[in-house]
Image (cartoon, rainbow, N blue to C red; front, top):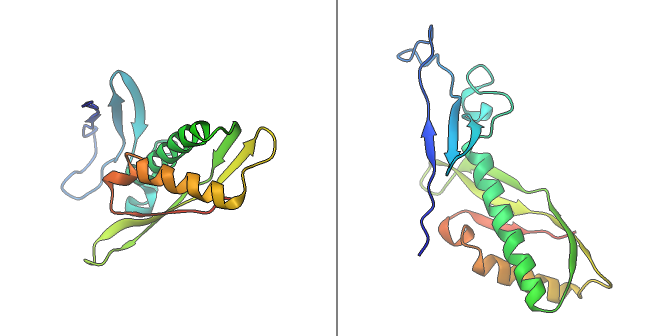
Length: 152
């Protein structure tokens, strides 16, 4: 099977007070040589310790679910004989207390907007393609979060 690697690097900066919790949550994510700025969510640590313009873990989870669903949906649509011209998703994840009373991203709603070559498949067939995509999406198979698709 495949192995996927990621590294995360953070360091305390001059003048920050770790013991008091006054330090930047900015860090660097490295995915096999490709670096991206990361941070804690401003919803969790506030704007003072989050880094503007960096991606937080909760956003990455929502983005991973959305991208995996899209890629799997495109594959299933192609296998079914359809041609997709464009696919856009404005996914939303909700963080709240789960059944155990812990904070978790409990629900991710995918809102795909799909442009088809020719007439789109009937709603029932599109729903079936989304169902297949969800069943086969590696990321959805890896999390407990409820994933809902609301195609427009």
